[in-house]
Image (cartoon, rainbow, N blue to C red; front, top):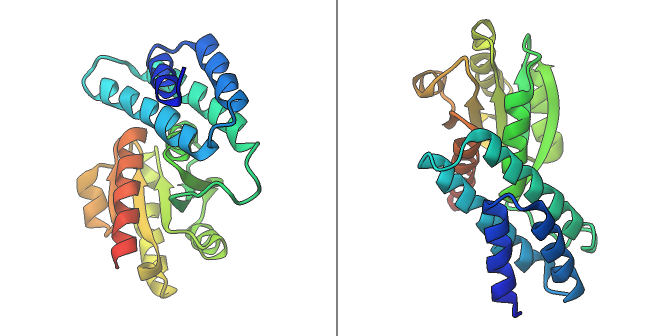
Length: 218
């Protein structure tokens, strides 16, 4: 089959959560020595976007979407390992963590998975992170975006503190700030001066892409 047919079949296998077929087609793509970046973009990224659309319309549920994301992440990792160091062009870099006082990481980890599939380089700084840890990591990593998650209502003020601390250190304009988590909503994000809010992993990735586009036109 030609590469367009192969890409189409990979997309279909992703939507159908067909692990065996994804593995077989991934090996076939590698055997054909196709451009790895093109394979990732036109087969896996396109396939997972189709999954995201099905989730939005209620035709696919969260466990299925996460299953598809895991399959894609595994396949993409397999292909990326064959790339020369530095060959994979990332869309942007995001430093992400859970705020101080909160040790929950499930939501954060889901967002990381989705961001990685969308082409972001993600630096996970963990949980229970004070504001300065976010900032120091963003500076050190030369990040485009800082992502802060919180699940507990009592830790939500830490997201506000992060933005205030960025202003105190005169770095607020250097980074876009994306917040999320069960403890907050879009209104809260706007009130504290965040640049974006993600209610779930897909929205977080979509907003991150939008914020990255804004940075590039500044």
